[in-house]
Image (tube, rainbow, N blue to C red):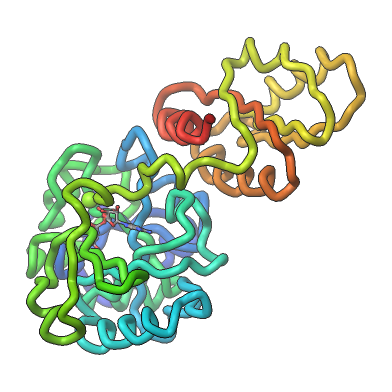
Length: 334
Ligand code: TXA
Ligand code: MG
């Protein structure tokens, strides 16, 4: 049984699990979160695997001290105006059910934000959550702890029913006080934009911070990770089956090959007629889907930085995290 009531001891245990790359479901004042160390790409990949989503969505990064903000966000990229809004919001609503979109710090792996250059940051108002975060690395990435398509969990029992033994530990802190997710705000524009309504009402934001609060058009930014533009690398990308990719001849350093596994890379190398060196990356030598997912965004960035103008990518096996990897590749294809 992996459910433990909240106590000093169970929280300590949860923090060690997080630090060693495991997953811990924990209570917050809104809903239960499925937590992973926000700095560890392999742990982040496990979150997506356990959620069983056919795509990668950007996660909320939870902190438990305002000083940690600088480790997860890059505040130097904020405009003077956005900085003012951030400080007012933090002063009035943190800790609390409010997530603020900020430029992401480069310490945070791209997988956490599904390739976006911004991250949603939240300081939850729940003692157990705060202790857990503080005893871990200080930043815990967590979506709501429900499988894809299910309702957000407001009790440990919901998490147990939905995710069961796939989570290393479920901390039971009783029923969530608020029971709806946090409000998500974009502060980069002139007015504050509500991307998702939630536990912090619009009226409170109007009262404390600014009277120009707008909604994003229904559905427009509800899942910003889905926007195609966020996914496209600069180079043109095409996605191929194992059989197709081994037949593609390399044309030198303007070409990059992104293999799913070493086996296919070796088969491709055998078929090369020219000795030109292309940029070659392998998502997982052994073909492990979790490792592959943890490398995907990083390797696409590396390829982009290398200046290649064509990327030939091998599709992953289309199950488990492979579905999300393929979705990401197809979105990047142009
Ligand atoms: O109350 C909550 O927010 C809960 C608890 C666990 O903290 N978490 C939660 O996470 O609801 P999740 O993953 O189920 O929802 C995250 C929301 C999504 O709507 C996502 O699109 C948005 O936050 N989001 C995350 N990162 C974003 C970003 N960089 N830009 C815009 N929206 C973002
Ligand atoms: Mg959710």
